[in-house]
Image (cartoon, rainbow, N blue to C red):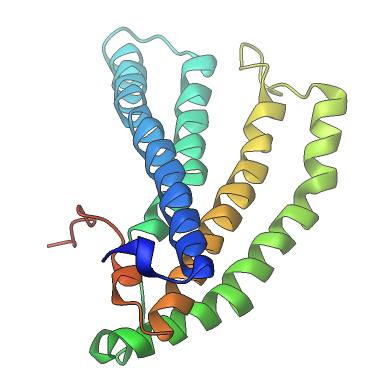
Length: 192
C-alpha cells in the first residue's frame, strides 16, 4: 500500500502502529532471552538440591524474578501477535472487519480499563515497596523485591502502549484499510 497517497491522519495512524509494534517487538524479543537464564537457574537449583544436597534461597528467588519479568514483560508482545487465548466459537469465523470491531470494543472496554485498574490498584503497593526498599523476607534472599513489584507498572505501561496500536489497527481495518490488519510477518506459532 502506498502510504504517500493516503490522508494525513491515516499516515500518522500507520506510523504510530509501526512504531508501537516495533517497540513491543524489541521489548518482547529482548525479554524472551530471560527464558534461558530461567532454565539455567532452575536446573542449577535442582542440581544443587538433589545432587549436592545444598540449597540457595537467592537462586530460587532468582527463578521467581525471571519468571515474573518474562510473564509481565511479554504480555504486550503476546497481544501484538494475537497470541492470547480466545475462548469463543464465533471470532475465528468472522470477517476481518468484524474481528476488528470485536478487537476495538475489547481494547476500549476490557484491555484499557483493566490495565488502568491494575495500575491504580497496585500503585500504593509498589510505592510502599520502594519507600521501604523492600527485600526478601527469607535469610539469604534477594534484596530487590521493590524492583520485582515495579514490573506490574511495566506490564500496565506496555499493555497500554500496545493498546494504542491495536485500537488504531482496528479502526483502520473497520475504515477499509486492509493493510492495517497485518500484525507481523512472523505470527506466533499455534499450539499443536
